Length: 261
Image 1: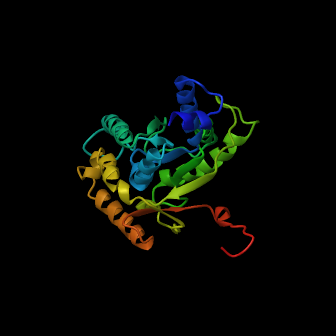
Image 2: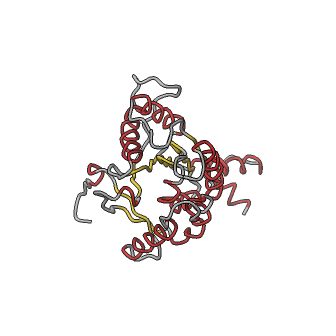
Image 3: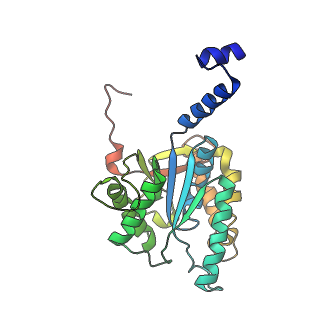
């Protein structure tokens, strides 16, 4: 084993040098940083938490940005009290899948469709430096979801422009933007990408059930059952046990090949 390591790492002659080289090699292999941007805490965990858990196991960096806490969704609590609860729940959910979490400054139902909100997200993008972004589809019955979609699309451009000044430097490293499947965002959503998440449904359940509203204590909508059933349906389509679906912009569907695949 030692001669093989010495062969692989050339002039490195000490175990410390070899260990350092191996560590650096592993670090350079971590090429993906996924930034999931949800209008409310719980949105991204529900729709793509299984994928985030899977990518974390592949050594990707996972960051979730909650633009609002979704603090207006509990008729039994004040928005302030429920917001504090949801923040605790979001932190616990992120811990289950090994994600970092960022909380935006906006209020539930009042996500502003403004230049200021776009600059805020652009600066988060510059700070996090994601290779991939996941967010809401463009059409939804919830105004915060459609606003989040519009903000994120524009923020990606703003983050790349040297003439746009924020706290962090311009960033152009985003490879793709994916839109998660959400029951509130179904209008015009057509599954384009199906990803097998069969091995991570258990971890996903542990993640999302950190939220009381998903456990069934607040809303009558069966969130857990719905999204598990949806994953089974997408899994059947993908010839897998469980899968989740994403849509992309029409321009991202263009393929340029030298011959038929």
